[in-house]
Structure formats: structure tokens, C-alpha cells
Amino acid sequence: MAKTVEELLVYRRAEEMWDAVNAILQAPRLRQDLRLHGQLADASDSVVSNISEGFEQPTDRAFARYLFISKASAAEVRTRVTCAKKRGYVAAANCQRALELAEEVKKMCTGLARYLLESNRKDRGLARSLSTTRTSGVRALKNR
Image (tube, rainbow, N blue to C red; front, side, top):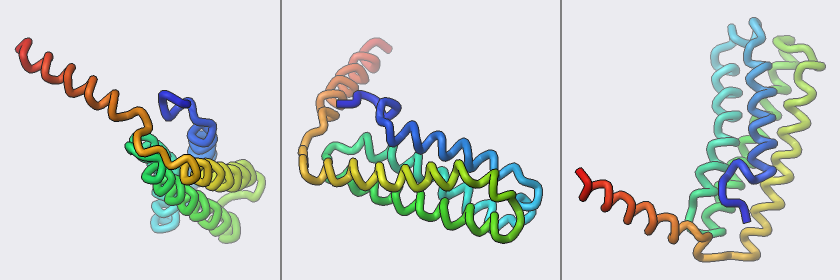
């Protein structure tokens, strides 16, 4: 079991997608379309953020919910990148990697979410880290 979100392959792929999208966001013509630029940036940010936020949830079911949000955001990334390509803001060759990664992330989110829903652990081991953090916090307050 992964101890950090960075250990998850889906998270690492989402970061790769985020990097590919950020390269696209530098295109001068896309930067002029503030609405599309913002939507693409937000969707890309949402994929990575929701995987990370979901990883910190106490139950598998809660984590799975965030993965489905990430999947939907990855679908939005595909749509927005395709929009930018069709409007002529970005060359098709520059979009290919982001589109491939978005599709891969969607599939990985679905697979991991299904696994989590089947395992349905009520304590993902985070309760232990919460009590350790709380104890450390109490010690820190006493040492003031």
C-alpha cells in the first residue's frame, strides 16, 4: 500500500499530464483566449489535486469519489485541448502527449476507484497517522 500519494502511478501520470498541459498553455494564441486558457488550466489542476486530496481521505469509498472527480476533470482536459487544437491555437503534434496522458489517467482513475470500492476499507491507515500528528501537536504546545 502506498504511504504517500507520490507513490501512486496514477498520480505520477497525472503530473505528467499536468506538465504536458502546462506546455500547451504557453502557446501565445491560446493565452489570448482567456476563458479557454483558464478552463484548461483549472481542469488540469483539478486532476492532480483531487487525486492528492482523495488519498488523504479516511475510507476507500471517499478516496474513490475523488478519483471519479479526477476522471471527469481528465475528460475535460481532453475536451479543452481538442478545442484549442481545432481553433488553431496549438499544433496537433503539440497536443498528442497531453491527450494520450489524459486518456490514460481516466482509465487509471476508473481502475483504482473500482478496486477501492470493492475493498471498501473503512480505515485506510490514516487514523493512526492522525493520532500521531495530534500527539506531536500536543507535545509541541507543551514545549512552548
